[in-house]
Image (cartoon, rainbow, N blue to C red):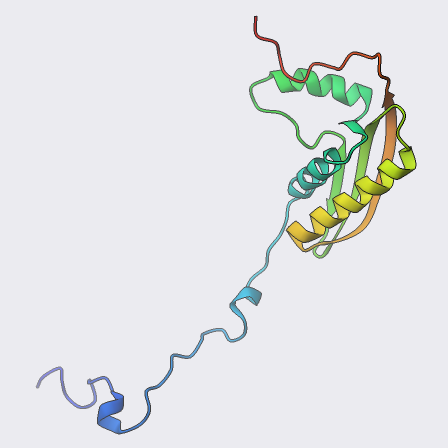
Length: 157
């Protein structure tokens, strides 16, 4: 007996006279809806921090104490804390954010807060698909023109 017996041969449209069969999708439905995507709190916090820093009038993120510890932490070779001053709580479809910012002297704090809120919401929702239910902003300091900036990068001598 050979392997080409009628019951072992694949059917072709030529032999049956039927139109060729299309492969059926397994699992049914749109492939994009098969499975679950989760976004970590740190990812949302990083997006929010970068979006907040893009706003004119935001001098820095975090309180003075957090920035001091952050400057020390930045010198350790594990890398910079991009999320300094941001806390994110992420659920399945929604997120809430708390931001602590330092504004430049002379800018309207309310305008800067509004612009930060709008930019953060747009960036987080566009990049993650999560609904941002709230962005709480705490202004912890004002950067005066005659104040020296804290060192962000260690100086090489």
